[in-house]
Image (cartoon, rainbow, N blue to C red; front, top):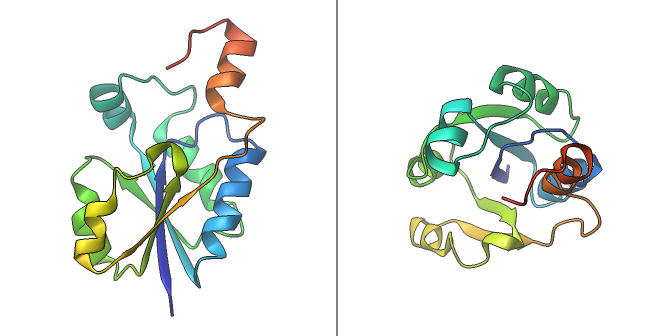
Length: 134
């Protein structure tokens, strides 16, 4: 069984997220999604989510492509997660291109997928609330 992992906040869930998770699942048989906790979002990314971690976790768990949801609490956990969950492929959006290549040294394939260009949570927030880009 080929195991895949991806990470994200998944706030204001939209079809770009679904498209990304579908493409992640196409990389293997079992998809683990690490959803950023509220504390990690605020302390490390200086982002405040509209939905709480528990709400975002529930939404992501309901997506048919997702087999398991775990919390993302630190940047460093990616290295331990790939071993703990026996990951074959790490997948993330191409806006992170090159940032996680160090996982190749852990024996993991690293795939950067293009984002759905016409949709983003940042754009939704800008449109709804007039917020500045992150």
